[in-house]
Length: 224
Image (cartoon, rainbow, N blue to C red):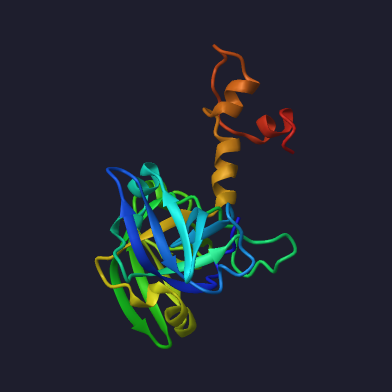
């Protein structure tokens, strides 16, 4: 698990690609401190495993599924990346609970200055927007951010000058894609309460009439 508070901006120092997979050599200093082989480091919000340490950073392998579902396939040598080590129990949770399992990507469709902040509007599909609430949390390229507004096909987030300076988001432009991860709590709540999900099918034998989630359903099955 991560917090969405970026510890360091690293830089891509080498890319080894096969037909559908590859590895990234990342130049970094802070996140390699106290890290061991097999530890998890979030790279632009994607949880990856350290497979090797180099003189100036570390190496991670990237499997086909990850390349297909994230923006990591677009990285080039020299590109900056957001880095965060996995949290430890007892750490301050400055952002929100982040798994590093990206739900999808979004495209920046506007970027404008708003007093001391930068306001981004990000185009996203219904599979992302279904979990968004105003003033709720979302992870954008590994950064824990607050949802400002939600529209039919997009949502907006705002960053302060500090975030623009210490993360890659300040360098992003209209048309760029970003990794998105919804609040993990919302996803689990939906899964548990979905009347057509595995939970309902377990509680009700095959052939039982499906019903919506009601207060009585929750009470009868021990939720309230």
